[in-house]
Length: 193
Image (cartoon, rainbow, N blue to C red; front, top):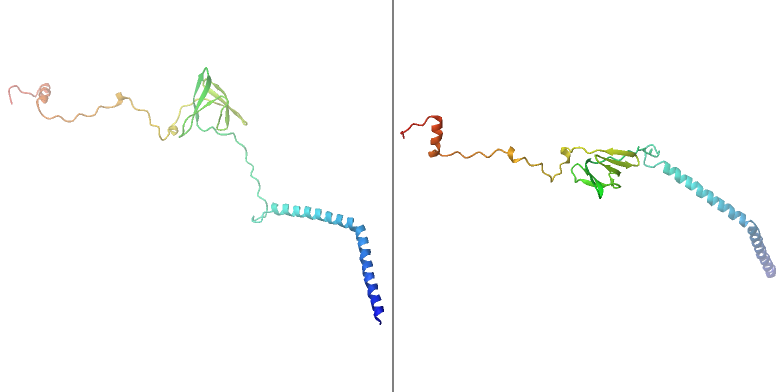
């Protein structure tokens, strides 16, 4: 073959390759939106599938023996407990005050509207205090304190001085003071030494 024929075949082959590429590009442009839309749907589906798998994995904890989620404990709400007792009520023209004592602690004074141990002081009256919370209403009356209310720094009340016995006098020596005692007993003798 001559050089010329080889060159012509080479050019024809290159032209065929270029034409095939151009046709491929034209065909791809028409189908491109459809192909990209499929990829978008596939990506959304893949994301949804991954989210479902993660949710399933989290439902079944890895380090649990049964691979089941722990059952939530249902805790029944209880009303707050009043710590201490109502020691007294003071009604004055400028306001009303209730005094609550606490075991081992200092007394707490509250006015109407104040909160103590989760209870709101609704009403202070002579001989009783009305407390409210989301659980309802509670009426508290003054009570006497017990031994558990003594604080470490407090001392018990002093005994009266009349109840104390006087200290014993030291023994006296024998001497003139004993003579009247002997006379009283009738053991003394006159004139004898």
